[in-house]
Image 1: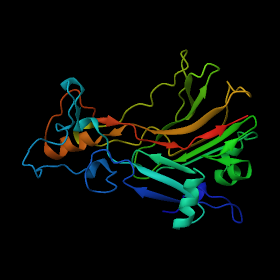
Image 2: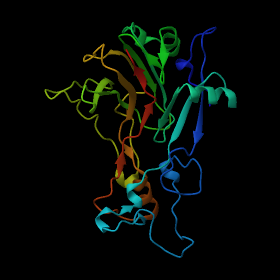
Image 3: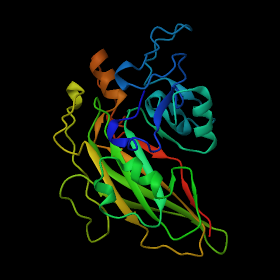
Image 4: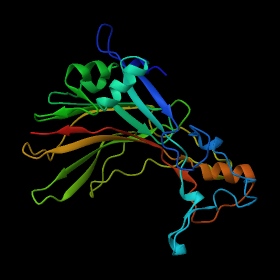
Length: 286
Protein backbone atom coordinates (compact mmCIF):
# COMPACT_ATOMS: atom_id res chain seq x y z
CA UNK A 1 0.00 0.00 0.00
CA UNK A 2 1.39 3.38 -0.96
CA UNK A 3 1.45 6.17 1.61
CA UNK A 4 -1.21 8.87 1.65
CA UNK A 5 -0.49 11.87 -0.57
CA UNK A 6 -0.43 14.32 2.32
CA UNK A 7 2.25 12.29 4.07
CA UNK A 8 4.68 12.28 1.12
CA UNK A 9 7.65 14.50 0.53
CA UNK A 10 7.36 17.03 -2.31
CA UNK A 11 8.45 16.11 -5.85
CA UNK A 12 12.22 15.74 -6.05
CA UNK A 13 12.51 15.23 -2.30
CA UNK A 14 12.70 12.10 -0.20
CA UNK A 15 9.69 9.93 -0.90
CA UNK A 16 8.41 7.08 1.20
CA UNK A 17 5.92 4.32 0.55
CA UNK A 18 4.49 2.24 3.35
CA UNK A 19 4.50 -1.52 3.25
CA UNK A 20 2.65 -3.41 5.97
CA UNK A 21 3.32 -7.00 6.95
CA UNK A 22 0.24 -8.88 8.04
CA UNK A 23 -0.35 -10.94 11.15
CA UNK A 24 2.56 -9.43 13.05
CA UNK A 25 0.58 -8.98 16.26
CA UNK A 26 -1.68 -12.00 16.23
CA UNK A 27 -2.50 -12.96 19.84
CA UNK A 28 -5.45 -15.29 19.34
CA UNK A 29 -3.31 -18.14 17.97
CA UNK A 30 -5.39 -18.90 14.90
CA UNK A 31 -3.71 -20.19 11.74
CA UNK A 32 -5.21 -17.32 9.73
CA UNK A 33 -2.59 -14.62 8.98
CA UNK A 34 -3.47 -10.99 9.35
CA UNK A 35 -6.88 -11.29 11.02
CA UNK A 36 -6.87 -7.66 12.09
CA UNK A 37 -10.50 -6.70 11.54
CA UNK A 38 -12.37 -7.52 14.78
CA UNK A 39 -15.49 -8.26 12.71
CA UNK A 40 -13.71 -11.17 10.96
CA UNK A 41 -12.04 -12.76 13.97
CA UNK A 42 -12.49 -16.52 13.47
CA UNK A 43 -14.44 -18.30 16.19
CA UNK A 44 -13.14 -21.84 16.89
CA UNK A 45 -16.55 -23.54 17.03
CA UNK A 46 -16.67 -26.45 16.41
CA UNK A 47 -13.08 -27.06 17.46
CA UNK A 48 -11.08 -30.07 16.33
CA UNK A 49 -11.01 -31.46 19.87
CA UNK A 50 -14.79 -31.52 19.97
CA UNK A 51 -14.99 -28.79 22.60
CA UNK A 52 -17.92 -26.42 22.14
CA UNK A 53 -16.51 -23.71 24.45
CA UNK A 54 -16.92 -20.32 22.73
CA UNK A 55 -13.69 -18.48 21.96
CA UNK A 56 -14.28 -15.80 24.58
CA UNK A 57 -14.73 -18.41 27.36
CA UNK A 58 -11.90 -20.71 26.29
CA UNK A 59 -8.91 -20.85 28.68
CA UNK A 60 -5.92 -19.88 26.57
CA UNK A 61 -3.33 -20.15 29.36
CA UNK A 62 -4.16 -22.30 32.37
CA UNK A 63 -2.31 -21.28 35.53
CA UNK A 64 -1.78 -23.36 38.70
CA UNK A 65 -3.99 -20.83 40.46
CA UNK A 66 -7.26 -20.45 38.47
CA UNK A 67 -7.50 -16.74 39.28
CA UNK A 68 -4.49 -16.24 36.99
CA UNK A 69 -6.00 -18.10 34.01
CA UNK A 70 -6.00 -16.19 30.72
CA UNK A 71 -9.30 -16.44 28.82
CA UNK A 72 -10.09 -15.82 25.17
CA UNK A 73 -11.91 -12.57 25.88
CA UNK A 74 -8.70 -11.12 27.33
CA UNK A 75 -6.95 -11.39 23.96
CA UNK A 76 -7.02 -8.87 21.14
CA UNK A 77 -7.33 -9.10 17.38
CA UNK A 78 -4.11 -9.06 15.35
CA UNK A 79 -2.29 -5.88 14.33
CA UNK A 80 -0.16 -4.45 11.54
CA UNK A 81 3.48 -3.46 11.24
CA UNK A 82 4.17 -0.40 9.10
CA UNK A 83 7.49 0.28 7.33
CA UNK A 84 8.42 3.62 5.74
CA UNK A 85 10.46 2.44 2.75
CA UNK A 86 11.80 4.31 -0.28
CA UNK A 87 10.01 1.84 -2.54
CA UNK A 88 7.92 -1.30 -2.26
CA UNK A 89 10.75 -3.82 -2.70
CA UNK A 90 12.27 -6.43 -0.42
CA UNK A 91 15.58 -4.52 -0.30
CA UNK A 92 13.97 -1.18 0.56
CA UNK A 93 11.74 -2.69 3.23
CA UNK A 94 14.68 -4.41 4.93
CA UNK A 95 16.65 -1.17 4.74
CA UNK A 96 13.78 0.62 6.50
CA UNK A 97 13.66 -2.01 9.23
CA UNK A 98 17.43 -1.76 9.69
CA UNK A 99 17.17 1.99 10.28
CA UNK A 100 14.11 1.37 12.51
CA UNK A 101 11.77 3.57 10.47
CA UNK A 102 8.81 1.44 11.48
CA UNK A 103 5.59 1.56 13.46
CA UNK A 104 2.83 -0.81 14.55
CA UNK A 105 -0.94 -0.62 14.95
CA UNK A 106 -3.46 -2.70 16.83
CA UNK A 107 -5.33 -3.23 13.54
CA UNK A 108 -6.34 0.02 11.81
CA UNK A 109 -4.46 1.25 8.74
CA UNK A 110 -3.80 4.73 10.06
CA UNK A 111 -0.86 6.60 8.54
CA UNK A 112 1.50 8.17 11.08
CA UNK A 113 4.64 10.31 10.99
CA UNK A 114 7.15 11.21 13.72
CA UNK A 115 10.27 13.35 13.30
CA UNK A 116 12.82 14.74 15.73
CA UNK A 117 14.99 17.81 15.28
CA UNK A 118 15.65 21.13 17.00
CA UNK A 119 13.86 23.73 14.92
CA UNK A 120 10.33 22.51 14.19
CA UNK A 121 7.70 25.26 14.37
CA UNK A 122 3.91 25.47 14.63
CA UNK A 123 3.79 26.36 10.92
CA UNK A 124 5.49 23.05 10.09
CA UNK A 125 2.52 21.19 11.60
CA UNK A 126 0.18 22.97 9.16
CA UNK A 127 2.01 21.64 6.11
CA UNK A 128 0.13 19.28 3.81
CA UNK A 129 3.50 17.56 3.30
CA UNK A 130 4.76 16.89 6.84
CA UNK A 131 7.18 14.25 5.57
CA UNK A 132 8.91 16.81 3.35
CA UNK A 133 9.38 19.13 6.31
CA UNK A 134 10.40 16.29 8.61
CA UNK A 135 13.09 14.77 6.41
CA UNK A 136 14.47 18.22 5.60
CA UNK A 137 14.81 19.17 9.25
CA UNK A 138 16.40 16.03 10.73
CA UNK A 139 15.49 12.42 11.62
CA UNK A 140 12.38 10.19 11.35
CA UNK A 141 11.12 7.58 13.80
CA UNK A 142 13.94 5.23 14.78
CA UNK A 143 16.61 7.92 14.44
CA UNK A 144 19.19 9.38 16.82
CA UNK A 145 19.71 12.99 17.95
CA UNK A 146 22.55 14.65 19.83
CA UNK A 147 21.24 18.21 20.21
CA UNK A 148 18.35 19.96 21.98
CA UNK A 149 15.23 18.67 20.32
CA UNK A 150 11.70 19.32 19.17
CA UNK A 151 9.30 16.98 17.39
CA UNK A 152 6.92 17.01 14.45
CA UNK A 153 4.13 14.45 14.65
CA UNK A 154 1.17 13.83 12.34
CA UNK A 155 -1.51 11.21 11.71
CA UNK A 156 -4.30 10.38 9.26
CA UNK A 157 -7.12 8.08 10.32
CA UNK A 158 -7.96 4.77 8.69
CA UNK A 159 -10.94 5.64 6.43
CA UNK A 160 -12.75 2.50 7.60
CA UNK A 161 -12.10 2.94 11.31
CA UNK A 162 -12.66 5.44 14.10
CA UNK A 163 -11.61 9.08 14.09
CA UNK A 164 -8.54 10.14 16.05
CA UNK A 165 -8.86 11.01 19.73
CA UNK A 166 -5.33 12.25 20.50
CA UNK A 167 -1.61 11.99 19.88
CA UNK A 168 0.71 11.29 22.79
CA UNK A 169 4.48 11.36 23.07
CA UNK A 170 5.96 8.93 25.58
CA UNK A 171 9.34 9.80 27.08
CA UNK A 172 11.61 7.33 28.85
CA UNK A 173 14.90 7.85 30.66
CA UNK A 174 17.26 6.54 33.32
CA UNK A 175 18.02 8.64 36.39
CA UNK A 176 21.47 8.93 37.99
CA UNK A 177 20.71 5.88 40.14
CA UNK A 178 19.85 3.73 37.13
CA UNK A 179 16.09 3.70 37.76
CA UNK A 180 13.80 3.77 34.73
CA UNK A 181 11.14 6.45 34.28
CA UNK A 182 8.39 7.17 31.77
CA UNK A 183 6.12 10.15 31.22
CA UNK A 184 3.21 10.49 28.81
CA UNK A 185 2.44 13.85 27.21
CA UNK A 186 -0.81 14.62 25.38
CA UNK A 187 0.45 16.80 22.52
CA UNK A 188 -2.48 17.02 20.07
CA UNK A 189 -6.16 16.18 20.41
CA UNK A 190 -9.55 16.59 18.79
CA UNK A 191 -12.23 19.07 19.80
CA UNK A 192 -12.07 21.96 22.23
CA UNK A 193 -11.01 19.91 25.24
CA UNK A 194 -8.36 21.28 27.58
CA UNK A 195 -6.34 19.50 30.27
CA UNK A 196 -7.85 19.79 33.76
CA UNK A 197 -6.25 20.98 36.97
CA UNK A 198 -4.63 17.54 37.28
CA UNK A 199 -3.00 17.95 33.87
CA UNK A 200 -5.10 15.14 32.38
CA UNK A 201 -7.00 15.55 29.11
CA UNK A 202 -10.71 14.65 29.45
CA UNK A 203 -11.97 11.59 27.52
CA UNK A 204 -13.10 12.19 23.95
CA UNK A 205 -16.51 10.60 24.55
CA UNK A 206 -18.11 7.39 23.33
CA UNK A 207 -20.56 6.84 20.45
CA UNK A 208 -20.49 3.01 20.49
CA UNK A 209 -23.82 1.18 20.34
CA UNK A 210 -22.71 -2.11 21.89
CA UNK A 211 -25.95 -3.97 21.09
CA UNK A 212 -25.55 -3.19 17.37
CA UNK A 213 -21.73 -3.26 17.39
CA UNK A 214 -21.59 0.11 15.64
CA UNK A 215 -20.23 3.59 16.30
CA UNK A 216 -20.42 7.09 14.81
CA UNK A 217 -17.53 9.32 13.78
CA UNK A 218 -19.28 12.38 15.19
CA UNK A 219 -16.42 12.91 17.64
CA UNK A 220 -12.68 12.90 17.12
CA UNK A 221 -10.78 14.18 14.08
CA UNK A 222 -9.73 12.64 10.73
CA UNK A 223 -6.25 14.20 11.04
CA UNK A 224 -4.05 15.52 13.84
CA UNK A 225 -0.62 17.14 13.74
CA UNK A 226 1.57 19.35 15.91
CA UNK A 227 5.08 20.52 16.64
CA UNK A 228 6.11 19.86 20.25
CA UNK A 229 9.07 20.63 22.50
CA UNK A 230 9.75 18.67 25.68
CA UNK A 231 9.02 21.06 28.59
CA UNK A 232 11.15 18.90 30.90
CA UNK A 233 14.13 18.55 28.58
CA UNK A 234 17.51 18.01 30.22
CA UNK A 235 20.37 18.44 27.77
CA UNK A 236 22.58 16.11 29.86
CA UNK A 237 20.00 13.33 30.19
CA UNK A 238 19.84 10.53 27.56
CA UNK A 239 16.25 9.70 26.71
CA UNK A 240 13.97 8.10 24.14
CA UNK A 241 10.69 9.39 22.75
CA UNK A 242 7.99 7.58 20.79
CA UNK A 243 4.60 8.70 19.50
CA UNK A 244 1.29 7.01 20.27
CA UNK A 245 -1.86 7.68 18.26
CA UNK A 246 -5.23 6.79 19.80
CA UNK A 247 -8.61 6.41 18.10
CA UNK A 248 -12.02 7.18 19.57
CA UNK A 249 -13.82 4.19 21.15
CA UNK A 250 -15.08 1.56 18.68
CA UNK A 251 -16.66 -1.89 19.19
CA UNK A 252 -14.26 -4.53 20.43
CA UNK A 253 -14.27 -7.98 18.81
CA UNK A 254 -16.29 -9.26 21.76
CA UNK A 255 -19.14 -6.91 20.78
CA UNK A 256 -19.14 -8.32 17.24
CA UNK A 257 -19.13 -11.86 18.65
CA UNK A 258 -22.06 -11.08 20.96
CA UNK A 259 -24.06 -9.73 18.01
CA UNK A 260 -23.00 -12.55 15.71
CA UNK A 261 -24.00 -15.35 18.09
CA UNK A 262 -26.84 -13.59 19.93
CA UNK A 263 -25.24 -13.94 23.35
CA UNK A 264 -24.77 -11.72 26.39
CA UNK A 265 -21.17 -11.38 27.47
CA UNK A 266 -20.25 -11.62 31.17
CA UNK A 267 -19.92 -8.22 32.89
CA UNK A 268 -16.13 -8.49 33.15
CA UNK A 269 -15.71 -8.68 29.35
CA UNK A 270 -14.86 -5.29 27.76
CA UNK A 271 -17.04 -4.46 24.77
CA UNK A 272 -15.31 -1.34 23.45
CA UNK A 273 -11.71 -0.49 22.71
CA UNK A 274 -9.56 2.39 21.53
CA UNK A 275 -7.34 1.18 18.70
CA UNK A 276 -3.92 2.78 18.41
CA UNK A 277 -0.56 3.00 16.68
CA UNK A 278 2.97 3.25 18.09
CA UNK A 279 6.17 4.44 16.41
CA UNK A 280 9.75 3.33 16.87
CA UNK A 281 11.51 5.66 19.33
CA UNK A 282 13.75 8.57 18.54
CA UNK A 283 16.83 8.40 20.79
CA UNK A 284 18.48 11.43 22.37
CA UNK A 285 22.12 10.79 23.27
CA UNK A 286 24.06 13.94 24.27
